[in-house]
Image (cartoon, rainbow, N blue to C red):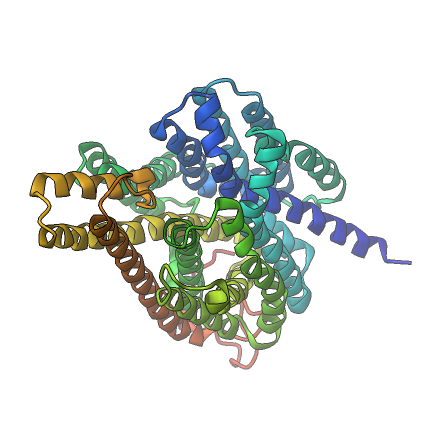
Length: 527
């Protein structure tokens, strides 16, 4: 008979995985429902953008707050509260009869996700104290979380076709209720820390991160010189600068910035940022290539991504095993390198490529992504004291969210800039008047912020020029992304070269040092 303690830990891990799968799935599955939402709720492009952006803004802005509240009031308690809020927000979204109400419901979902996400990883660190069993648990948890992101486009289409657009929200309700019951019965009660709530930090971090995400999301659509984008970016920069100054002077900060003095911690979170940069950049480019260039349907494009999904599921537990035996450096750097190779390889294929030709790219990208999620979490949990795992988990997830937003915004801007320049030159060579050329370029670059739709009725030569400029812009953006990830792999390899033996944490004395604490980490963690 299985040990009751083992059974309880397994059940608790299942509850944590269920919750993370649901929140990660919700990040992407809503995209499949946007056309139906626009039709039935009479929403334009701006309204649909807020259905997506409302969630991201609140989620990114409140992640640090969620970690702090968990450390202060109990991680299991805040996790349960977050899961309840997320489930209620899903039901609210399913019942929405206007685009404004739906956007508000998405923000409620974002609040719930921000509360439950940081506590999830820190609870795993409490449940599984052995180095190897913790790495395996994090590997499973990371694989399930990544599966939610990867399988969203595959599930979204059938759900919308069978149940309408509300189906992508109602599917969360029974899952969330089951997760609540299982979690309430199995999650451990972890001792809280007697610390004051850092209210100035909460306000400044929420305003700064939320404003930064808004500027990054709206910049490609409105233009980087738009008054609202510039104002929002400036206010976000001021708020984040004030946040740093406040946290450095606060006795009990919500984010201990001294953690970043540790090279392994900094290397791990840099890896997490760049993984999201590559993953969301891929999720942005792959549909554009398949649907906008190769002519695939949305459903077929979603199914075509299944090899990448399968490799994420395979690689995540493997990465946990490797991280426990070899340390997080090797699997994390290997994963980043594979992501760079895959994104660069994707830039070699155009409109006439066959699926079997670039299938290796999907396998490589999926395996690389799967190899990175677990080592980031393992490295961070090894470097912080138990009372700071909520803070550390929130930091990881905040930078991951920002990495995804920056990836789409930066690479999207590269695509748009290259496309506009090439198209203007091509149209000038074809003798198209400059005013007409500018209007055509604007219509291509602003089509759903993707450029994937072409104006109808174009002469063959002009149509070929548009397609050629679009493909060239896609390829250039992919290569820029691949180069950025490759540089990050080198940086992470250097930073993680200082990792200490398994089980050593910041503020603790590792074996083999003669009882002396290493100078670089002295005083980072308060006892």
